[in-house]
Amino acid sequence: MSSLQNISLPGPTITPVSKPFWDSVAAGKLSIQQCNSCQEWVFYPREHCPHCLSDDLTWKEASGSGSLKTWSVIHRAGHPAWQDRTPYVVGIVELEEGPSLLTHLLVKEEDLAYKMKVKVSFEVIENHTLPFFTKEETQ
Amino acid sequence: MSNRLQGAIIGIGELKPVRYSEGKTTLGLIAEATRLAIQDAGISKEEIDGLLVGPQVGETPQHVPATVSEYLGINPTMSNTVDLGGATGPGMIWRAAAAIQAGMCETVVCVLANKNEKGEALRSPNRNPIREFDVPFGASGANTSYALLKRQHMEKHGSTQEEFAEIAYWARKNAQLNPNAIFYGKPLEVKDILQSPVISDPLHLLEIVMPVAGGAAVVVTSEEKAKKSNKKPVYLKGAGEKITHRAVSQAPDIDALPFSYSIPHALKQAETYIEDIDLLSLYDCYTSVVATTLESTGLCKPGEFGEFVKNHSFGHDGDYPLNTHGGQLGFGQADLAGGMSHVVEAVVQLRGDGGNRQIPNAKQALVTGNGATLSETTALVLGGER
Ligand SMILES: [Zn+2]
Image (tube, rainbow over the protein chains, first blue to last red):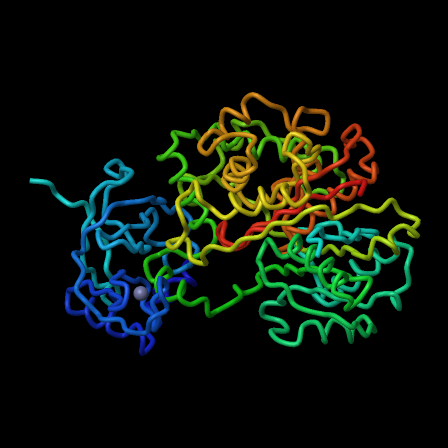
C-alpha cells in the first residue's frame, strides 16, 4: 500500500500531567505516580488518585518489572502506519507495583506465556522513546 | 417506594442493514427508524413526549436531542443522549421507563442509527488516555482489545478456538432464518471460522462483527397507555447496569467483568431466574463477548462456557435459544444501533411474531448490551406479561 508509506507512526499526545512520565522514559527510566495519601501506585498519569481521590501524587521510578496478563499478535493493524510492521505483539503488563499498562512486546511468538516475567526495554520509534517490554531473563 | 420498573415497549422499527449506505444522513436514518416504530405502535408523532438518542460521533457532537427533535418535528418534555457504546440501546430502555415513572413524560422514542459510507475516515480523533497510552504501542481499535480479553480467557481457563468458533457458527446458523440479516443466505461451518484470516491473534475475521449502515427505534410507554395499545405490550421487568473501566488495560480480571453484576441485578429485579428465560439476546460484537456474558448469567461457571456451548443448542428450537435474529455477528452491526437489535428481537419473540424462527411459548427474554471493551454493561429482563 504505497500511499500509506508516508503516514508516520502515531506518537504519544503528551499533556502537562503526563509529561513527567514521557520525560523519564526519554531518560531511560520508567516512572509512575504513587499516592502520598493511600500509598497506592497509579497508572496512567493523572491529577487525582483513583483509589482515594487525593491530589497528592509523587512521581517515582518503578522497578520496570511485571508479569504478562495477556497479549495479541497483530496481523492486521488498527492504524495503517503499523501495517508494515505486522506481525507484532502487544500485551498488557501488570507492573510489580500493581497498575497495569498496555505495551508492545519484544518477545518471540513461541516464547509468549501467561504470567511470564517481563521487564521494560526502551525503544526509539521514529522520534519518540517508548517503554516496550521484553522477556526477563532468569539467572 | 417500589423499585419495580414500570414501562412497556409498544413499538419497534428496524432498518434492514446494508453494508454501505450512499447519500444517507444519520438524521435521515434516525427519522426512518422512528417512523417505522411509531407506525408499529399505532401512535402519532404528537404522542411522543420523550426522546433518547445516542452520541452522533463526528456529526453532531453536541445538542443531539435538540437536533433530532427539530428534524422529527417533536417537542419532548424529556430528552437526553445515552452514551454507553453498545450498551446504549438497552441502557435507553430502562432510562425511558424511569423518566416515565418520574412523571416527566409518557411515551419515549429510543432511537439509534448509523450511516456507513465507503472510504469514510476513522472517527473520534481524540480518545485519551487510550490515544496517548495505547495507540503509540501499536494497539488501535476494538479488534485488538477484544483479542486481549480472548487470549486471557484461553490462558486462564484453557478455552479453545473451537469453543469460541461455535458461537459464531450459531449466529450464522440463526441468521439463515432472518431475511433481513446481512449474512442471510451465507451459512458457515466451524472450520470456515477457524480457517478465516487471523486479524488480531487469537481473533479470526469471522469472529468479528461486520460494520453496516442501519438503525433501530423502540417506543417505550407507561403500562396504562400500553394496555390500550393495539400491539401486545412487552414489559420491562428488570434492569442492571455497571461500568468498570474504559481502556482494556484497566479492565478487571476476566472473571470479574461488569456483566457479573448487571445480569444478576436484572434477574433479581425481575424476580426471576436464568432457568426461566426463554431467549438469550446477548450482545455479540465478538465471540469472546458472548463467552464471558454466558459465564455471567449463571448458566455456566467462569471459564466453562466451552463445555456449555458444546452441550447445548442455540437455535429457536434449541434448549437455549440465543440471538435468534442471527446476533450482530449474523445480522450486522450498525454501530450503536447494533445493540438495539437485541432489544428488537426480544420484542419480536415475546409478541410471538418470530414466524419461522419463533421460540415456542416465549415468555421472558434476557437482553444485554456491552460498550467499549466489556466496560459499559447493561442487562434487561423483558416479558410478555407483567
Ligand atoms: Zn490514594
